[in-house]
Image: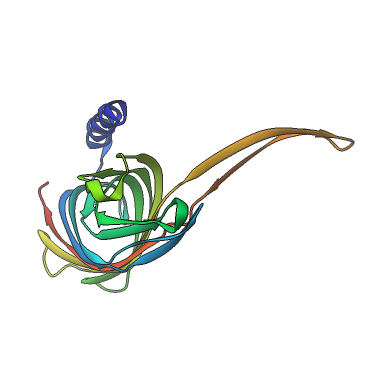
Length: 204
């Protein structure tokens, strides 16, 4: 985790130095819906709740930007364990993500946008009743929405967002009559869908 944070700081410095356009401060807020997932012994659920966060957006060229964002929520959760025992309690779920954003202007004020993000998801403040330690996973995400920019300094975005911690990562080699090669696969049963937005302030 420490190495990732150091790498992230390096990315911020490098991206900031290479950014050709504006730099904006982002503030996130939204509602994340509950998600049910499979476990080895049955099922679990991450409850719904308010998600908040912040970040920086660096304009690399017109209508194209790179974002560095942090988002967090503190939902209730449960999962099934051995002998039909269910564990439940509150958990902090954090995302640190870097991604690309593409805007499609409709007029001088309103633009559509989409983003693709990758980074890490990690838990914190896990309730003792969950009988679980903190975990860190690679994560993927994305957003689709609208940006409303009534001025050069202030803009508002509304979006639908999907975030997913990658729960397993596997690879292997294969050989056969057709030749050789490698395979790599990722997967997850946790998909956190949210509706929200951000108020953005241009600082450069």
